[in-house]
Image 1 (spheres, helix red, strand yellow):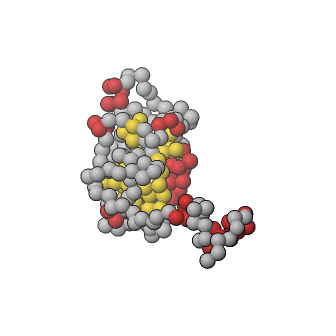
Image 2 (cartoon, rainbow, N blue to C red):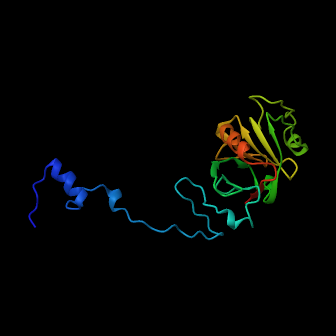
Image 3 (tube, one colour):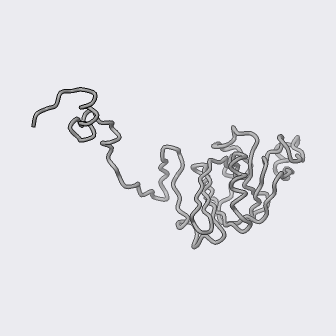
Length: 195
């Protein structure tokens, strides 16, 4: 086979035909590998630091919908009742293990423009805390979804620096725009698991 002369036109045509494999973009030569199997006791993160989750690993059925709040990778996963809508949101998580609760619960109440009252244990550690009405200084942000456990909430935050960090007193926090979107699709009765 005769080697064609190197011109821009021949390079484009030849690259598409495989005649100049070194000139082809590396993505064309990328090896496709099957996804890794992740052992539950080993935490391996993908490039965005989120550990992949499947609802089937946590629930028998989707019911009214399902949420897995992964406190290790600081991500909240949501699946709609029919499984057609899957969403993944970065989140804030509890500051310490003492404040962390894991297990199964559900959304029992939802509120737009929540107010906030510190718990007795919060007041014990910081007596300056006080009731905060809805608004920009409210730590619950614009929307709150209350869980079956007292004082545990999936909520928004006006302080966007908290997302992706250990920064809450037990709750799972989302950006206000993310909690608004989740609030719109997750009905009361959505099952929740914190892992």
